[in-house]
Amino acid sequence: MPAYLQNTDDAMKKTDAVRTNKAELHSRNPHRGRYDFAALTKASPALATFVQLNRYGNESIDFADPQAVKALNQALLSHFYGVAFWDIPPGFLCPPIPGRADYVHYLADLLADSNNGVIPRGRMVRALDVGIGANCVYPIIGNREYGWQFVGSDINAMAVGTVQGIVRSNRCLSGKIEARLQRQQNCIFNGIWKADDHFDVTLCNPPFHISEAAMTAESERKWRGLKKDSQPATPKLNFGGQPDELWCDGGEEGFICRMVKESKAYGEQCYWFTSLVAKQSSLAAIRRELSHAGAQQVRVVEMAQGQKISRFIAWSFLTPELQDEWQQSYWAPLS
Image 1: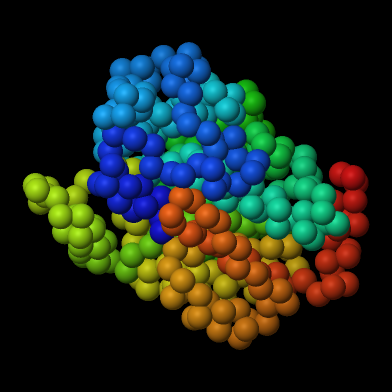
Image 2: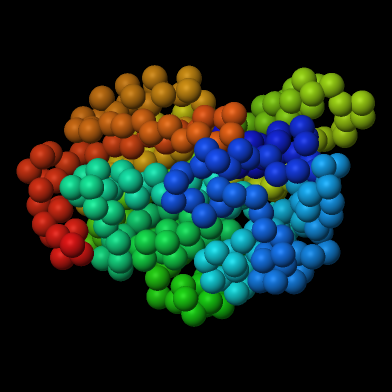
């Protein structure tokens, strides 16, 4: 489930406490414990305005308030990742940091499984974030935790410009994250992937819904299912999102299948292609597309986050011989 929908649902249920059962996050995820609001407000004093006691007497924020969520993200990125400046324009996706971090840490495990159990680290490891958005969260976490170099792509020029501003404003990110504008609206890798590019891994949080109407209907269904006494005419997306971040033709299934088709052309320039998959039911069609494309390896990695099970699918076109060459060329110097 995309970040905005998962966390909107959580906020609908209980807006006065932290929703994720963090004990089930990845073992290297630094966000497993309760939020330390004293430390977070010290790192980002602006957060203090939104901190309040919940019904259990614990410090928290109102997770239904987009400004509070944004302030929390600013504090988390400052405290845990050394990012002094982070801001996004109104209406853009403001994702939950703990869940984003989980995907990155599981990707590190995926690379380690292909490298004799050792996580490849440092500037020689390159990752491509498809649909980086304005928030740049995946590249920030991946670079600050593992030293990976990132390229992020997006079809929204304002998102690309915002990412470039975030990188320029933080010395720790300078020269380590590049944002590229996708000028071909119906393409994913084509137009972004340069002839001399190689990426050890790609990642993506694809648009979930097939249309705005479908998204609205799903949000309203969730509100009805929770039997709210008063329901807003249009349920608020507390994590925001531009249209291209939230829906597309064919929804996530169609998007990932298109990604698979395009990925074949770059099969020898990437070790692992990956994408989040919100719905278990989407996997069958994606697997068929991968079989048709001739993928050599396919894995589905589940990530437990509270009562929800999220997952990503990973595929590679590298033969065993090419895998050995990749490890020797790109990862052996890091050992």
